[in-house]
Length: 130
Image 1 (cartoon, helix red, strand yellow):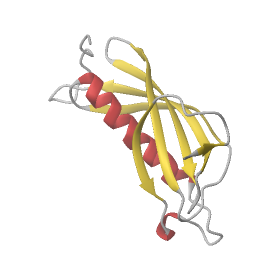
Image 2 (spheres, helix red, strand yellow; image 1 turned 30 degrees about the vertical axis):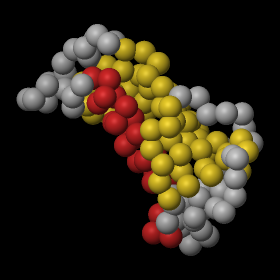
Image 3 (spheres, one colour; image 1 turned 135 degrees about the horizontal axis):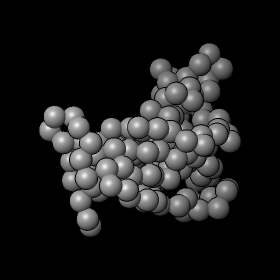
């Protein structure tokens, strides 16, 4: 059973991946940019499902790193579509680390991502109603 150190994650589990040595600096800390890239992938998955098509990242807001990730930790990304505009969506994203060979889960970072739906020519298109 997983033990959550920082409350429970908000949203749906959208992506899980393992932090490997190639994702880390010499001290064994995982690069923040790698974590952010995984968050962007998860937002792309969730937003494309909601938009029923192609999406791109327009902005990343309010990102702060609370705890480091280490080699061997499993990164778990949770997403929630908070707001849907005409062509854009705002997602709340939380990144949690399940510590290596442990049942401990800790929040690593969180952010707001703005994703825009695109048509076949790459122009913004309306997000369809649910």
